[in-house]
Length: 378
Image (cartoon, rainbow, N blue to C red):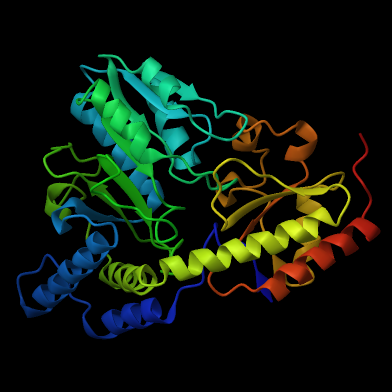
């Protein structure tokens, strides 16, 4: 079996599995309880918070655990609106955000907020000057994805957000750093982001856990209210097993970030070499791309058909964001993909365990698919 769908989810690492199992069997108390079992669970969360904070060079008081990136992104957007939405009504974002950002912003737009969606340039970049052109005294939030989950394009968040803050310090800045976390440096001290969204299941932890970094002193109103857990910012009993698993994955993979990146570069190079040898197959390349995420077009063949052809041979890829459920990608459209490319593009996403031999087998099977499947009629 070959798994190339790591941008959708990764296989949980042994450290994460062990941590979750240990908590489930031995420390199942509610961390809000005042007795010994509760205090032991609370200590585990404190330790996990420290580990996740360290992985992005943040203060542990700036980390709040969530159920995952969707909740973190929704929290950043709706908490911003709850806090300053009566005075400021403009949100600046991009046309290439993950649905958990774009759909949340669309909901605010439906309620009367003004939304500016920046389209990337031909080389995939979000222009700093274009963002700044729209910042004014009515601007509430600038939310820009760090690494695009479909194309792998990397935005220079630090430069973008420093320019925003230089224009108006009152504007909130948020980045969905899910696809960048533990792949490229995510440094809370230098990003100039007020809020950073993280996910566990993209970095070898189980699904259902994530975090949001909220800069100290921001005083955001909570999006989820109730029992006042997570220092009153995110109510709901914490999932101690999943939080501990997330922390262990963060600790383990923080140590190997550079080594894994170099390996991903080699895998992408091999993928590119193999695509150059096939007519009608090409790798989309932009000015700045994360080597882990690769957008591959096989012209004339439907991506869904290719996906299932490969699946029958136990090779797993995706036809775009797993959250899109097979719909035509508005993100790829915003990047300038043609209609025929939208129908014929696969996402190949690598992890630490993938090999060049696996890339070769993938490309061999894509060639077999081209020789045996019926082309799309135009």
